[in-house]
Every structure is written in C-alpha cells, then in structure tokens.
Amino acid sequence: MKSVIRYALAAAALLAAAGCNSSSSTPSVQPTSTPGTQSYIQTELLARPAVKEAFESFANHDVTNRTEPYKDTTLQNAIGIFTTTVAGRSAGTASALQAVLYPNEMVIDTSQVSAGTGAYLGVETGGATGSKFGGRALSDDIITISLGAIFGNTVSALGLTADDHKESPCLMTDNVSYDKTNTSTFPYVQSPL
Image 1 (cartoon, helix red, strand yellow):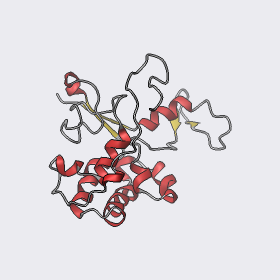
Image 2 (image 1 turned 90 degrees about the vertical axis):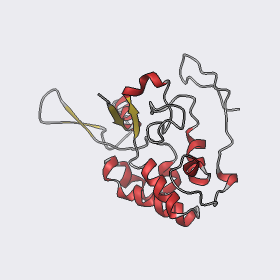
Image 3 (image 1 turned 135 degrees about the vertical axis):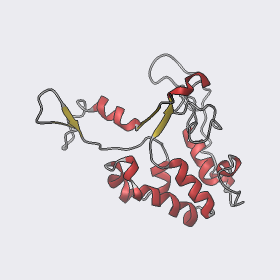
Image 4 (image 1 turned 180 degrees about the horizontal axis):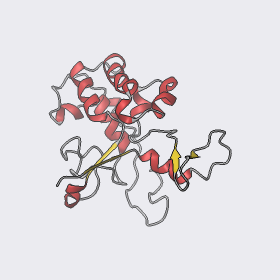
C-alpha cells in the first residue's frame, strides 16, 4: 500500500525550540485541559524555502505562517500573481507552479524508499529532480531549484506546461555552491564556496 507522508519542516523546528526561547512573549506550547497532553501553536510555516520569500509580500507572512497549508489561499494566489505580473511568465507557467508549490509542505512517498535518497520536489515531479521518494536531501540546492522553476524553463522541461520563452537567465540561480562533502557533525555541510 502506497503511503505518503506530508509534513511541514517548521513544525519539527518549532517543537525542538519550544522550550528554548525564553524571550518570546507568546508561548509556543500551551497546556490543554487534559493532563499529560499539550497543544501547539503554529508560528512559522516554511516547508519550502524561497516559496513565501519569492512570491508573497512580507506583510502577508504572519497570516500564512499561522494558516494550515491546505487553507492558505493567500500564498496560492500570490504564486499566480507574482509569476504573471512580476516575473512576466505565462498563465500556464503560473498554474504549473501553483500546482507544484502549493500547499507549502514537504511530501515523502515512503513506498519509494528504494528509489534512493530524498529529492526536493521528487514526488511532485515524478522523480525528475532525482528520485520519487521526495523530501529533501542535504545536498539539494533548494534555492537554485526554486529559482529555476520560477525564472527558468524547469516546469516546461518537466512537461508541466508549454514553454513561454520568458525565462530570466540571470535570476535562475543564486550562484552559491558548496563542495557537497558533508560531515557527520552539525551543521553537516561545509561552508559555501
């Protein structure tokens, strides 16, 4: 049976840091009425780095941070508006980006564990980004992948829409790389080159 696990990376970070930030005026953890259980307040939603940052105005970040991924029409609409209005891309490209990048969550297909390591947008692209397992490998260059989708021909090369020939090559990468020699200790990656 195919099992797909969907999650927001920010939830794990929030849980890990819940008791570590004593300077916050809003507690991350609030007790419920049932002894032994806790209720968590979502304060950040950032499963896909660069999605909110590229598409959405900063004024809307708090709203989308506190909205469930499947109910975030603010972000979904912002992807379409930015893609057509600011990036000058076609409606087909905007629609394809909305389909791939919304909801703002990581997708892992556990039935594809034998496909290899994680691959950013692997499930959504049918394995075109490295494997069908999905998630995110430590060596995935998330920002360059995202910029290639927004300003390059990634979505048309994947057959998700016709090429609109409105690419912006100077914006397709952040031009930051590292040697991908990871370590077994935090922060696991080497410094950027």
